[in-house]
Amino acid sequence: MKAQIRLRNTLLTLVTYLIAAAFLFPLVWMFMAAFKTEAQAFATPPVFIFTPTLENFEKALGSYFPALRNSLVAAVGSTVLAFILGLPAAFALAVYPTRRAQNVLTWMLSTKFMPAVGVIVPLFLIYRNLDLLDTLPGLILMYTTMNLPLVVWMMHSYMTEIPYAIYEAAKVDGATVAQEFFGIALPLSTPGMAATALLCLIFAWNEVFFALNLTSSDAAPLSVFIGEFKTSQGLFWAQLSAAATLVVLPVLIFGWIAQRQLVRGLSFGAVK
Image (cartoon, rainbow, N blue to C red; front, top):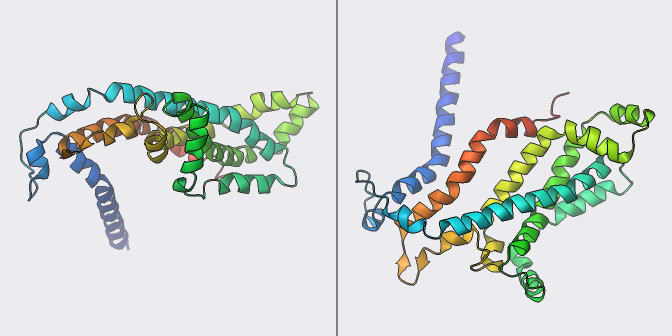
């Protein structure tokens, strides 16, 4: 019996490693190509033994930092704004729900169903008329509307798990709605807020479609920066890989550091 259990655990571990390797292989391949010359990156069959070069990173770093600044401002700014708008809404829907609270939640979620390409034309016209094209405020506003349903839905689920008896005890002590929100709901929802914020940052950081269509140079984030390496002369794979590595690296490091908080937040309230 113990031998069967040991064999099963070994097989499960092997399968897990194989699945992880399949997901990580594109990143490893991109990382290797970033240190190759263009000829080596295009070589067939692939070149696995080569002398690493930093030339691709030197070329990519030329316009990397302005795009990095734009991505940071847009991702952080939109996350903060989405929390400012979404947290009170989630609190109201969770603690003081009306008859149509579930309909409101469903409607907010339904805004994520429409393909982005279906709304880009009216959005472009609105942004053009409001002079928001290729501006950081416009990009922050776009990412805020993109992440707002996520904030409301996730924080609503976390705040629903807070026992209502705590609010009743606070009411007995004369607490106002604002005191319930700032003194009870927010402190007890901290793990959920951390997980939600991390997801909002990742989604804003990785967004490509709206950034490509609503920005060009001044407010172009890293997702637009990668596209600069596809020119009329061809696609520079080695430089593109170096640029993609620089784009992926910050969010990978941040996700690795925050993984414990993310797991804790996603499992918050799952077990009573």
